[in-house]
Image 1 (tube, rainbow, N blue to C red):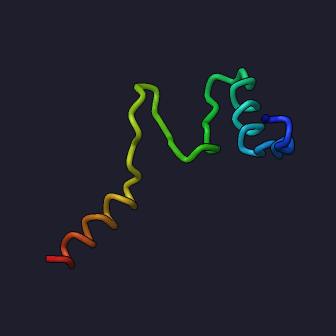
Image 2 (cartoon, rainbow, N blue to C red):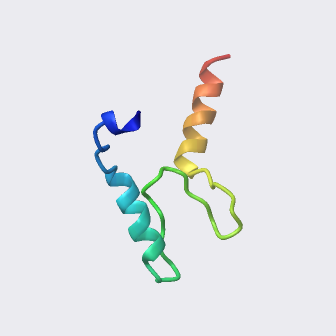
Length: 61
């Protein structure tokens, strides 16, 4: 049944992710998938984003 479907086009992002995993440099930063984590596994929020959120909060009241 599945032989009727064409072979999917390879996803370029998967190739980027594979290259990241293969890179052995200890201080590499993964910017490919959009989720950034520090050494403890937390996703830090950039100071500029915090300031923008605060500005939006202040003007929405």
